[in-house]
Amino acid sequence: MDLSKVSFWMAGRYATNCVEISDDPASLNKAGFWAVVNTFEGKWICARFKDVQDMPLPKVPWQSIETAWQSSQSAAEYQSNVALIKDQIAAGDIYQVNLCRILSADCDQGLHGLANKLQSENPAPYASYFKLPDLEIASASPELFLDRQGDLIKSTPIKGTSATEEFGEKDRAENVMIVDLMRNDFGSICESGSVDVPRLLATQAHPGLFHLVSDVTGRLRTSIGWDEIAKALLPAGSISGAPKSSALKTIAKLEKIPRGPYCGLIGWVEGDQAVLSVAIRVFWSVNDGKIHFGTGAGITWGSDARSEWEETQLKAKRLIAIAGGELL
Image (cartoon, rainbow, N blue to C red; front, side, top):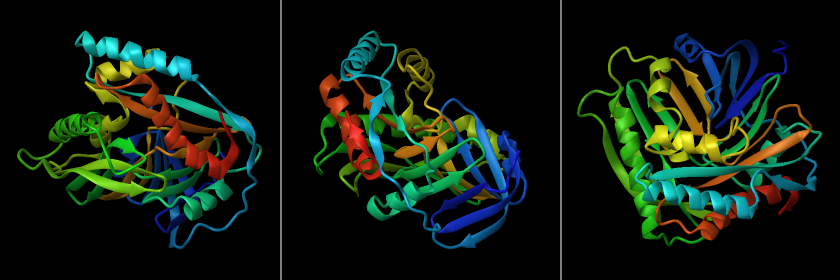
């Protein structure tokens, strides 16, 4: 495997000179700076770098996409799947499912230039770029999956999306549901009584839309390793559903193709310090002559099928416009 072109950038840290790639999250317990991707389906790519500099991502031009983006689900298919999920909710089998679709377009260039353009035109708190031998990601993620500072951890799930600062009861209920799920996940690896919710249902502005966000915090139990953290928390509750196990079965049944890095995580780990984002608002390619982008919405009993489809369009519209091409 050629590691010479592997690189990673996030929040002003640019990593080069990759010396190791592992598919085992236990590798993150080893010393060094690791850049990390975990796919929604659970595949790990952990790259250890020798050189890390504080600097902007080097500038590379981007040629706009000129073709239309094709969706893995049509509007009719997506809305039909919303109805099927609501039937499951009515039967008491599930409470919430994050239903996603994948957009794809022809692309014969790398994504480094797109990462530059996203930073300029759609700044995001967890923007990143990761170049690997068989995967390239340009991320404009707004969502924190995990911040770790020693034994203190924090997650900031996003649930609730609006074009304005006004949110309905469905948005608030969905956010609280996922906060409860995250509290439960944290409880399995944190000291008893340490899990807290210091911020609940806060409004957060992002380019083109608003989100409801909450913070979940906790103190890790002694000797908890990265492999144990991963097993307890992944996939993130905000992009799966509740109960998580039931939601994952529904997602596997209704979504036509794997999500891949979309709705996984991307970020860095260095000993007991880490910043890992939820891989939403991300573009990726896998050397298949295509560029991909994922979008989705949380489905609850209060969901309106047409409105949920429109939410997926809202989340995609601005970023697709930056990349180029027609959003059908």
